[in-house]
Every structure is written in structure tokens, then in C-alpha cells.
Image (cartoon, rainbow, N blue to C red):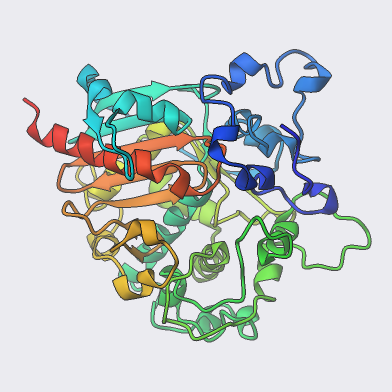
Length: 438
């Protein structure tokens, strides 16, 4: 595939593959054909010239090379640790159920059923794990991902940011009804200045900000350029760093009226969190969660050129550790009898947000959903809720079925709408099966 015409050589960090967004799904290599190990990306010392991937020209984030890039971000971009601490990992209990592979479900908009196993290939899965009542009942790895590697989780990162904020609100450290400018005066003249913290947490801010990756003039590219950790050309006149960009965001409309999914909300929230705690989201996440629940690996955030963690999409972690986090949330913030996250914080996530505001957001395929604390609330009969990231990243929590699913993927199309039809009904089928199995 030809590389996109947009790259970070112009000081714009390549967030998504523009060419991938523009092409039809049937134009891509299949999951089997695009296996990054079989294609030989970055193998050898040095690799052959036609197998070299780079952050300089954005090639590492172009499908099919993307399938290698999502598990090798740290080799190409600067990062900051989310330490797991020095204690021994806590093993997860296993009771694998091979029958899950043959479960059948009806994809949205299709006449024929599909098996769970077939859906994993359809969605370019890199790794997937299913927990039921805290036990691992299913676990598989594909492509470049294995038990020892971490994977970029993209916008799933936002749910970690939202969870930290919800914890601070429950503890009284953060007042969700206060204006953003009360905590971050630097944002007083921006669109965020007169928004409440709650409106930022639920993305009901009114911002002049587009994340249409197919539009070269969309604000997301200026945001990307500001967050680029590489050296910018001497004639660059834009803001440097995520925080500096946030100060330039303009208001469009009235806050609180509609849900608008915009990454800059998460980075504004990350700044608020850092201001009230005196710690970055990376440090706070480590201290409050990552070092407390027996993680196997330290995680990391990608950072901008000033070392600021990308709170809206820069998190990278292992499959099992993400499952541990999901299980912590499913158990109302309690782990081994210790309340690590206030139960009020989890309850606030689970109650969901405004369905009316969500309905105005332009997600017709997610009818009846809501958004709260940077989590997506399905509002289905099981009250399932999920953290989501482009290319197919998911933590799906079904409280009724006592189930957690984590799926890491490298779908050629960034938008989740490309895989939801083959994922969300599959998750519901597994939930129903687990509730009835003997």
C-alpha cells in the first residue's frame, strides 16, 4: 500500500493512517495475510530496506505495518513509565473454555451468523482475554503480540483519565461543578475556561475542534503537531506541547447541550488532574492502581516534546494487566478486600450520562448509548459499559454476566464502526453463554 501523504516530517505526529480511513475495507489484506511476523517488518540487524519502519515518515502507523507498530511504540517514540512496583505479580486463575470459539452470533446488518473465532480474524485481533467471575476462560494472541509485549490502546486511554478524575471527585479533591479555569487559570481564555469539570469529563463541551482525519484542515492535525515529540522546523509557529495547544481551542456553541467526542477533552482533564494532585496522570495511575493489583508489566504513556503524557490516547499496556484493571472496575474498585477506587466513583461511571446529549453526537449505530467519565455506556439489558479505542481496542465490562473482555487489535480502519458490528453482538453472545453454562 502506498504511504499517506501526511507524515510527521512536517512536525505533525502521525495519529492515524489517512489512506486507511479513505479506502474501503475490502481493499485491505486480510488479518491472516497482514500478519506482521509473516510480513517480516523490522526483522534482521539491520532489517532489509523495504522492511524498515520509522516514526520520522509515519510508516510505522500505516496499515499493514501498523500491525507491527502498535506493539513496538516504545522503540520509536519517547515515553514515561507507569510503574507496576517491585512486588511479585499476582497470577490470574484459569479455567479455559474451548467451547467459546464455536459460539455463534448474528452480526449487525448481516443475514448469516458468525462464530466467535471467525470474528477475531474479521476484526484483526492481536490479543483477547475473557474473564468470568475473575477467572480467565479465554485467552489468545495473534501477530506481533504475545504474553510479554504491551500494546497501544489508543483512545481507551481516556477511560483511565476519566477513572482517575472520578476517583478525585468521589474523594472531594476535585469539584466536578467548578469551572475549569478555577483549577487551570491558563485555560481561562480558551473554550474550556467557562466549561465545568463535569462537562469535560462527559465530553459535553462546545469546542471548535474536528477529529475528521480525512480533512487535512481539521484541528486534530494542529493538536498532533503540538504534541509531536520530534524536533520541529525552525519556522514552525504553532504551539509546542499538548497544554499549549489546549490554550488555543475556541468555543463553538453552548457547553452541556450535546456529547461531542473530542480527544482534547481528555488532555484538558489530564491537566486538571495534574494541577489538583501535583502529579502527572502517569505517576498517579501508578500510585493509585497500577502498583496495587499485581500487574505483570509496567505500562507507559507516549509523551509530547515536553514530557507531558498523552492523556487522550498514549497509553500502552499488556493484555492481562488491562484485564486486571477491568476486573477491578467490575468489582466496584475493590481488590483482595481493599477498596482502591471509591465505590462511588465506579457507581458514577455505571449510572451513565445523558442519552439526549449522546443522541446529538452522530453515533446512530450506538442508539440509546450514553457517555460518562470517559466511559461508553451501552445501556443494554446488562448495563454493560466499555472503554474504546481506534483500530479495535476494548475493555468491555458486563456487570450482570460478571464478565470482562479485553480485545487489542490493529484493524486497518481507525473508526470503531468498522468492527462494532462483529464485536458488540459477539460480546453479548459470550455473556449469555457464560451465564447459562454448566
